Amino acid sequence: MRVTCGLHPHRKMGEAPAFARKREAMGYDALWVPEAQHNPFTALALVAEHSENVRIGTNVTVAFARSPYVMANHGWDLQEYSGGRLVIGMGTQIKGHNERRFSVPWGPPHPRLREYVEMMKACWHTWRTGEKPNYEGEYYRYTLDAWNWNPGPIDYPDPKIALAAVRPLNTRLASELADGVLWHGMMSWAYRDQVLVPALEEGARRSGRDLKDLIVSGGGFVVTAKTEEKLVEAMAEQKRWMSFYASTRSYHPAMIMAGLEDEAMLLHRLSIEQKWAEMVKIIDDDFLEKFAIIGTWDEIPAKMRDVYGGLNTEISFSADIEDPDDEDHIIEVMNEIKMIPSYGEMERTPVAA
Image 1 (tube, one colour):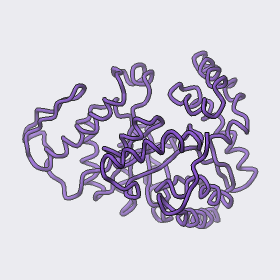
Image 2: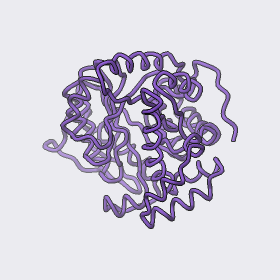
Image 3: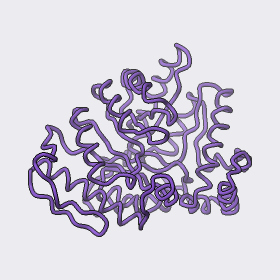
Image 4: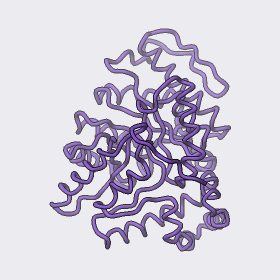
């Protein structure tokens, strides 16, 4: 099992170099940069500069806020600069954020995302081969380029693309057309196993690929800390984040399957009214446990094995270093996680609805 680590969404760009150096030295397999308060590609360039071998990527950047050409260009430059280590993890975001935050038009996200990936690959093909661009879809078009705009070939394979998903269509697209899936945390294990895993496997069948060779990451939250006392604090923080996510209607199918339809509707209404403090009160321990594995650092590898063993190809384990002994402790835990069987390496029983 590969083990990944993400730069905290609220960290400043200047913290990226130290993050990259430290986490690569500790033995992480991949480092992610999110798109939250800051542009992920700026910080990712610093991560590339201050690391040598670890895989790097975005998890996740907002696709529709940029044209496929712009996204492809970001990826092409960073793939070359990093020495071929890049994964572009991207997702559609939801209608409200596209229209009211990024100020871009909204349309059917699934067919548009398919064209988005196709056009990115068309850009890379033209830049690598010099062939005239000829991609024309319903939503995107790439038929014009010239020598002074074309960045030309690079000495590395095309960047990998992983798609964020919380529904079956984009999950299937991730394994059919892209290089893997980054499942959102807001899902129960039953929803993942009964709704998303069949779509993931169908996408791989369509493309004739083995899921062992793709990125299968995420699905549920991981809440962990060094001690029981710190774990209580981590749970409280996760409840705050979960109250925000659970108010989003795109994630409600997973909540409905978990028997939380009334809570989903209430959270959505409270979010419109911006009653953030009231929303957190709805997320009790039972609610949290339906969507998260919870444990101290020493407990979490066994719990991860039960939930992710034989399915994921990588697991995120982000742990803060607060005193000198923490680093060695985190490395020990990470090495335990690496021993968890990856996709297809152990028998697993799907969680029933």
